Image 1 (cartoon, rainbow, N blue to C red):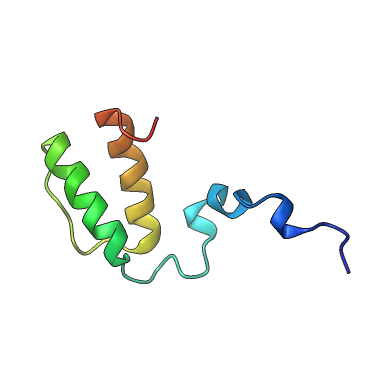
Image 2: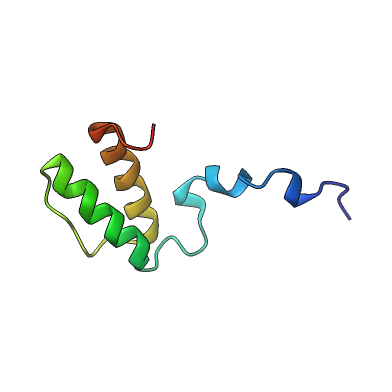
Length: 71
């Protein structure tokens, strides 16, 4: 058993590559869809409601960089 306490690094999962998510091929969550729609409107890009969780996460990162959000 590991001596590492997972609570000591609460954001470690937030940095996991979406390509490595076990549920990455599932449809995006409602929260992802809502935020992605907002970002898409701000970036003047078409919103794609068919993205997977992993692809939505990548698109959110891309649009956050484009719009200046999330910095």
